[in-house]
Length: 272
Image 1 (cartoon, rainbow, N blue to C red):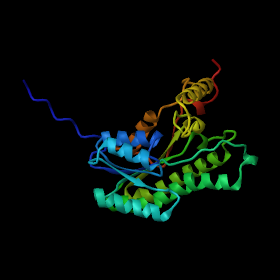
Image 2: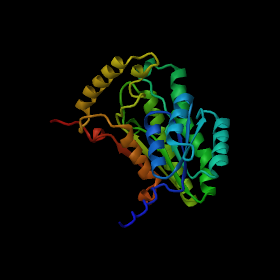
Image 3: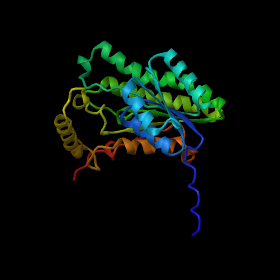
Image 4: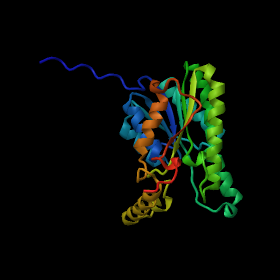
């Protein structure tokens, strides 16, 4: 019997990637997929119990969990130092952490607007500013920012969120221009409706029962079935695959781009 050929190395073999908001949802899916593709992954979040559990499930050889509030400069410095101490270098970043609130614009408090801006926009800025020099020192790499469908168009009742995600697209383009000479590609994923806790936070409250979660998910599915040409919400795993594409050599000639992954929602209104 002939020996089986060795498995080819993953698309991120030898890479070290820091993923924020990695305790659940899109960030968790990205961390798991990146590790499966050969990367050593630094999972960063403020949901420590969940993040530690995900890292433990991936395995200590390939994953490290760190507490990180993305709005804090010192936290970013400490996270980068810990990542380098554990894995030697960092050559990839996924700025995935984010918050979403539904509210009429004129009813949005200044505190709420500032919270969303701090996490979604300032968090991405601090991530780029802190980690990009390390990526350059490692010989180049990638940064993937999480923007949104609403970073390219308008949507009622998410004014603060949409403003922050438009800003992420702007940061992505400027960073791509400035960092290209250092061998760093910077792109943005722009998801539409994705089935994560952030999309329907009330269903995922600590005291929510499974029946409530299922009811909210069914309602969301029915709502988006009417809006999205493909007739459903996306999954975190589908977004993770786009982030992987933008983080590996398959996208070697792509930088500065907001790439929409929304089931056709941005294309227009279906009349079927």
